[in-house]
Image (cartoon, rainbow, N blue to C red; front, side, top):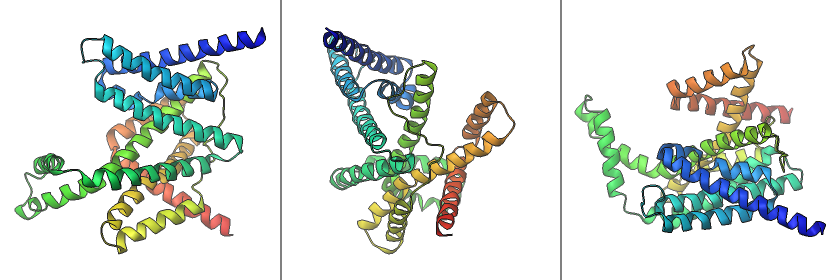
Length: 313
């Protein structure tokens, strides 16, 4: 009897969770494609933090099936386009891999430092396969033209000598485009994870695993691999050079994460209310943008070198 009740309860959790994911995705798409591109991992992470692993996997699977059915039922393609469903499936897969690694790390009592670093290396392997088998073989002429037009608009008041470098700059942007996109996705994914943790806490649900990122430090083994790729990007020639450049950018996320932790800790020490701190950080990102990311990246490198020196002593 108890087994039957538990089974029915589990089915209800899967049903409600899959509906939550599917409806959230449709609402994000309806509100704005920009909102969808930023917050699409949020419902997956919220569900992944709230329910058992098997229930989470089934919920994600049913949400994909539900969205495919909705696409067939809804005659207008404005809400559920095929491209959105592909993106939904990709984000589903990435979240499943991440939640699986979280459960694995929690089971073996490994720290957040290893979780972030191993996750980064795992996705770097997938990135290598994508870059080698797919991205390199694409025709980038349209993308190059698009970048060239943007650079031309920016440099229209510059000298002719500088304008002649437009094609060279466009080629560099095409080269690093996949790794830059990956880092941006990791940043938004991390912000969604933090927001999901907050929502789980506010909803008074029990978090199924607990990963504490406050003590995150980039491991020495990860830094060794990063330095190896960095030197390869300087010394070696194409095509290894091209991948090494992308790998260095891809792996820099861990230092961004470490820098943000230090940046956040400095703000926590300041005698300012939490809401005001959040507003200040948000405004800094709005007005400083990439400059703030570079500052945080520098802080991450600095913190990593300082930790290595501490361990040696």
